Length: 495
Ligand SMILES: *Cc1c(COP(=O)(O)O)cnc(C)c1O
Image (cartoon, rainbow, N blue to C red; front, side, top):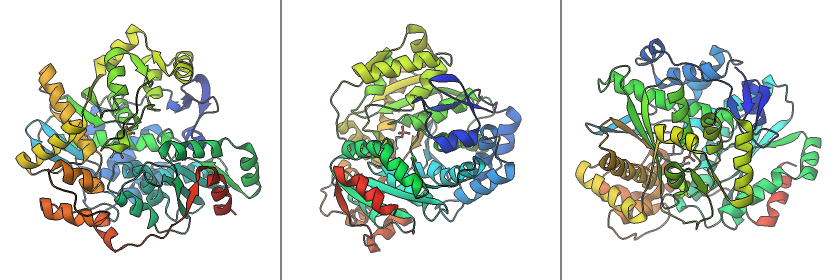
């Protein structure tokens, strides 16, 4: 199978080339030129298989320049019980007869990004070998919290790689900060930036496009790459958990093969829900994908009107991983919905850059609404949802998951759709202790990682082991740099 750019259908790359390169030279994203079929036999055969086998099967359909043995090895390492606190890896939690939560936060960093970032470094280093790359890769990450830690864990001591994470000094939770600054591994570096997330991200982008620095690093045998969800190697592992959830619903008798289900996904960069769309295109019986937004509701408006307009206020919310105005993976959806038309995508993206908005034609909007529904959730409703579900079901959700569950309820009320729905649960509530304690109507009396214990006491729910262990950790990385000092920090790290 070959890969092409969303902005140029004539490019043809192997999967290893697409993963090694990350972003296409024309600014587009790599997409498979066609979608392999998930047959009935395949799905039925996966029902009795563990998560790692389900993942290897899905990956194998897309990465045909990797052998089955390679993919089984990587999936076995990435989704083993040493890194997850449950043998199921991505278990379903049944809330009631029509709703299940797909819990994607049982991995080492307690957020769904582990599902991709535990395996992506293995796919990337293999891709670099397959493309005869001899330089050492340094992954640069600007993070608002979850990605940085998941990337640090994924790349920890992976031979032939370095990883450097920049986070906004006052822009991440105390738990997230200590998760990153106490990271182990001899190939890692973590630096606070004196600025907000946008400053850190702008700084990283400037480093990527600095040709002098690139030449300098090349001399020393290094090159820079990124671990964000524009890379195909990060997106493709996410398809597996949609398939896995379907298999689990078959295994427990909720559905039989062919029955349609819905998924509701708390969305920021559109990477998670896009993987669900790809699963549907492969033939997984999905009826609707419900795209849930917090107050930053640019995607809700887009799905409902066909106008993408980022000219709007930006809000800092209690679900920070969804505080995004430009969802980069939407470009991949546009490409498919507009009939793989690279020129159309290029135009939309140019308009977005110039005017901050674009509008899709009616036939594309019709395609969107045939598969997607969109809804938003306010800050007050996020809190209320956490409290209500905890009182009624004794089930504790994080803020991102609560946004999705609220939007699902609204959607059901509005459409009367009775299709069973899987809510994709993206983080442990213990990653966002202060917001969750507040949502439960309690005062936030302590700070930092002490809140983990406070939330345990309040709810009787145990924190995931790696978060609980933070209480005994001391920070190892203490550097703070100004935004214009980031480049120098990279130079020093890659001496
Ligand atoms: C990253 C993240 C999201 C958003 O996922 P996208 O793929 O960017 O849409 C939602 N919830 C949590 C907890 C996250 O870390």
